[in-house]
Length: 166
Image 1: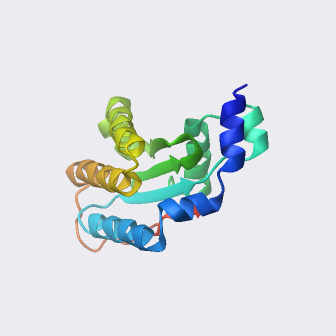
Image 2: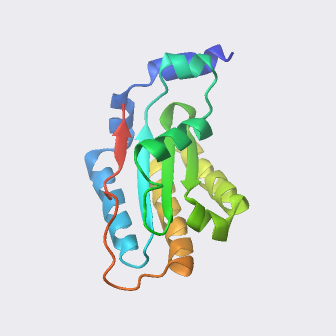
Protein backbone atom coordinates (compact mmCIF):
# COMPACT_ATOMS: atom_id res chain seq x y z
CA UNK A 1 0.00 0.00 0.00
CA UNK A 2 1.37 3.45 -0.90
CA UNK A 3 1.45 5.56 2.25
CA UNK A 4 2.64 8.56 0.25
CA UNK A 5 -0.45 8.28 -1.98
CA UNK A 6 -2.76 7.93 1.02
CA UNK A 7 -1.19 10.96 2.69
CA UNK A 8 -1.47 13.02 -0.51
CA UNK A 9 -5.14 12.12 -0.87
CA UNK A 10 -5.91 12.87 2.76
CA UNK A 11 -4.23 16.28 2.44
CA UNK A 12 -5.92 17.23 -0.86
CA UNK A 13 -9.31 18.81 -0.26
CA UNK A 14 -11.96 20.40 -2.44
CA UNK A 15 -10.40 23.79 -1.75
CA UNK A 16 -7.38 22.63 -3.76
CA UNK A 17 -9.64 22.00 -6.75
CA UNK A 18 -11.21 25.44 -6.30
CA UNK A 19 -7.73 27.00 -6.20
CA UNK A 20 -6.67 25.32 -9.46
CA UNK A 21 -10.05 25.36 -11.23
CA UNK A 22 -11.61 28.66 -10.21
CA UNK A 23 -15.21 29.46 -11.18
CA UNK A 24 -13.99 31.44 -14.20
CA UNK A 25 -11.97 28.48 -15.46
CA UNK A 26 -14.86 26.06 -14.93
CA UNK A 27 -17.10 28.46 -16.87
CA UNK A 28 -14.50 28.55 -19.64
CA UNK A 29 -14.49 24.74 -19.81
CA UNK A 30 -18.32 24.68 -19.86
CA UNK A 31 -18.34 27.18 -22.73
CA UNK A 32 -15.83 25.05 -24.67
CA UNK A 33 -18.03 21.98 -24.19
CA UNK A 34 -21.17 23.83 -25.24
CA UNK A 35 -19.48 25.25 -28.34
CA UNK A 36 -18.08 21.83 -29.21
CA UNK A 37 -21.43 20.11 -28.89
CA UNK A 38 -22.91 22.41 -31.52
CA UNK A 39 -20.66 20.64 -34.03
CA UNK A 40 -21.42 17.00 -33.21
CA UNK A 41 -24.07 14.82 -31.61
CA UNK A 42 -21.78 13.54 -28.83
CA UNK A 43 -21.75 14.53 -25.20
CA UNK A 44 -18.69 15.60 -23.23
CA UNK A 45 -18.57 15.71 -19.43
CA UNK A 46 -15.70 16.92 -17.30
CA UNK A 47 -15.39 15.80 -13.70
CA UNK A 48 -12.68 17.03 -11.34
CA UNK A 49 -12.19 15.22 -8.06
CA UNK A 50 -9.87 16.41 -5.34
CA UNK A 51 -9.04 13.03 -3.83
CA UNK A 52 -10.31 9.59 -3.05
CA UNK A 53 -11.82 8.68 0.29
CA UNK A 54 -9.91 6.39 2.63
CA UNK A 55 -11.78 3.17 1.85
CA UNK A 56 -11.07 3.25 -1.93
CA UNK A 57 -7.45 4.18 -1.16
CA UNK A 58 -7.04 1.20 1.15
CA UNK A 59 -8.28 -1.12 -1.57
CA UNK A 60 -5.88 0.64 -3.96
CA UNK A 61 -8.51 1.97 -6.33
CA UNK A 62 -6.89 3.36 -9.45
CA UNK A 63 -7.85 6.63 -11.13
CA UNK A 64 -9.19 4.54 -14.04
CA UNK A 65 -11.47 2.51 -11.76
CA UNK A 66 -12.77 5.69 -10.16
CA UNK A 67 -13.32 7.30 -13.56
CA UNK A 68 -15.49 4.36 -14.60
CA UNK A 69 -17.57 4.80 -11.42
CA UNK A 70 -18.00 8.52 -12.12
CA UNK A 71 -18.89 7.73 -15.76
CA UNK A 72 -21.75 5.65 -14.42
CA UNK A 73 -22.77 8.06 -11.65
CA UNK A 74 -23.01 10.97 -14.12
CA UNK A 75 -24.95 8.83 -16.64
CA UNK A 76 -22.45 9.57 -19.41
CA UNK A 77 -23.37 6.17 -20.83
CA UNK A 78 -27.01 7.24 -21.13
CA UNK A 79 -26.95 8.97 -24.52
CA UNK A 80 -29.01 8.03 -27.53
CA UNK A 81 -26.02 7.21 -29.76
CA UNK A 82 -23.75 5.87 -27.00
CA UNK A 83 -21.27 8.63 -27.76
CA UNK A 84 -20.69 10.22 -24.38
CA UNK A 85 -17.14 10.91 -23.21
CA UNK A 86 -16.01 11.61 -19.65
CA UNK A 87 -12.83 13.56 -19.03
CA UNK A 88 -11.97 12.74 -15.42
CA UNK A 89 -9.30 14.54 -13.39
CA UNK A 90 -8.13 13.15 -10.05
CA UNK A 91 -6.19 16.06 -8.64
CA UNK A 92 -4.37 14.28 -5.79
CA UNK A 93 -2.76 11.92 -8.32
CA UNK A 94 -2.48 14.56 -11.08
CA UNK A 95 -4.22 11.91 -13.15
CA UNK A 96 -6.52 12.21 -16.10
CA UNK A 97 -8.68 9.43 -17.46
CA UNK A 98 -10.96 9.39 -20.46
CA UNK A 99 -13.90 7.01 -20.45
CA UNK A 100 -15.75 6.81 -23.74
CA UNK A 101 -19.07 5.10 -24.32
CA UNK A 102 -19.14 2.15 -26.69
CA UNK A 103 -20.37 4.10 -29.73
CA UNK A 104 -17.40 6.46 -29.92
CA UNK A 105 -14.93 4.02 -28.34
CA UNK A 106 -15.56 1.48 -31.11
CA UNK A 107 -14.56 4.08 -33.69
CA UNK A 108 -11.57 5.56 -31.86
CA UNK A 109 -10.09 2.78 -29.69
CA UNK A 110 -7.91 2.54 -26.59
CA UNK A 111 -4.64 3.70 -28.13
CA UNK A 112 -6.03 7.13 -29.00
CA UNK A 113 -7.53 7.72 -25.55
CA UNK A 114 -4.36 6.54 -23.80
CA UNK A 115 -2.13 8.80 -25.90
CA UNK A 116 -4.44 11.74 -25.26
CA UNK A 117 -4.23 11.11 -21.49
CA UNK A 118 -0.42 11.10 -21.73
CA UNK A 119 -0.46 14.45 -23.55
CA UNK A 120 -2.73 16.00 -20.94
CA UNK A 121 -0.59 14.48 -18.19
CA UNK A 122 2.41 16.37 -19.57
CA UNK A 123 0.45 19.63 -19.32
CA UNK A 124 -0.54 18.75 -15.74
CA UNK A 125 3.09 18.14 -14.76
CA UNK A 126 3.82 21.68 -15.96
CA UNK A 127 0.96 23.01 -13.82
CA UNK A 128 -1.19 23.74 -16.89
CA UNK A 129 -4.41 22.15 -15.65
CA UNK A 130 -6.95 24.29 -17.48
CA UNK A 131 -4.95 24.26 -20.71
CA UNK A 132 -4.58 20.49 -20.49
CA UNK A 133 -8.31 19.94 -20.06
CA UNK A 134 -9.09 22.46 -22.82
CA UNK A 135 -6.73 20.62 -25.19
CA UNK A 136 -8.43 17.37 -24.21
CA UNK A 137 -11.89 18.80 -24.92
CA UNK A 138 -10.65 19.93 -28.32
CA UNK A 139 -9.14 16.53 -29.15
CA UNK A 140 -12.28 14.66 -28.04
CA UNK A 141 -14.39 17.11 -30.06
CA UNK A 142 -12.40 16.38 -33.22
CA UNK A 143 -13.16 12.69 -32.87
CA UNK A 144 -16.84 13.31 -32.19
CA UNK A 145 -17.10 15.70 -35.16
CA UNK A 146 -15.49 13.10 -37.41
CA UNK A 147 -17.59 10.15 -36.26
CA UNK A 148 -20.80 11.82 -35.07
CA UNK A 149 -21.23 15.07 -37.00
CA UNK A 150 -24.10 17.30 -35.92
CA UNK A 151 -27.16 16.72 -38.07
CA UNK A 152 -29.18 19.64 -36.74
CA UNK A 153 -31.97 19.60 -34.22
CA UNK A 154 -29.95 17.60 -31.71
CA UNK A 155 -30.62 17.98 -28.04
CA UNK A 156 -28.14 18.50 -25.26
CA UNK A 157 -28.48 15.24 -23.34
CA UNK A 158 -26.05 16.00 -20.49
CA UNK A 159 -25.06 19.17 -18.63
CA UNK A 160 -22.05 21.05 -20.00
CA UNK A 161 -20.87 22.40 -16.65
CA UNK A 162 -17.88 20.55 -15.17
CA UNK A 163 -18.60 18.62 -11.98
CA UNK A 164 -16.37 19.18 -8.98
CA UNK A 165 -16.37 16.19 -6.67
CA UNK A 166 -15.19 17.00 -3.14
